[in-house]
Length: 156
Image 1 (cartoon, rainbow, N blue to C red):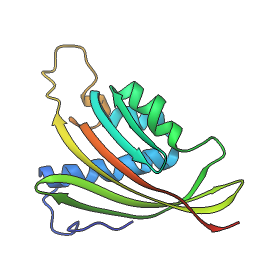
Image 2: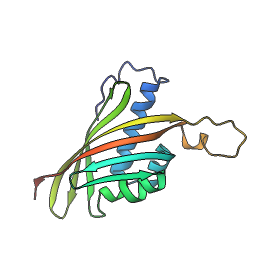
Image 3: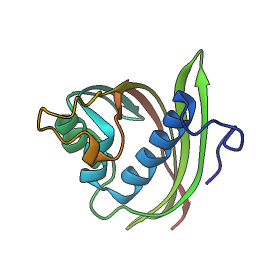
Image 4: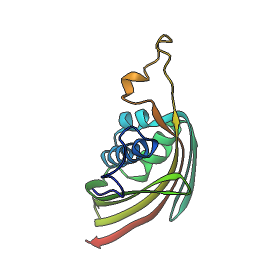
């Protein structure tokens, strides 16, 4: 997996947080890992998506995961490889571009997607009993706009 500017980014910066979050999102999506996706999305995430045949909208992490992200890939769609991951921004808004090789009953496909997202910083005050620290980071995706090029058949 590759990333723009990955070498010189301060690991504590917002840019580094966006790169880590974007890369983790791609891995969780490729693995169809609902628990990992839940750790990355804010509870009140606002999600918009566009695939070749449909527009998608979800409000809240559970709806985004259960009704959109885990629906994009059918149970028989197996992500064989994350071909590439690239990071950038659009006027300061982080984006992640990724290409996946997906195999299903119809053959091997290339799936390319781009997602723009905003991070929210969940500050844990330490005494409210929540599990922010257990999630591994206080940064979550608060808003995401994603577009998919579709499943492009490479071989049957």
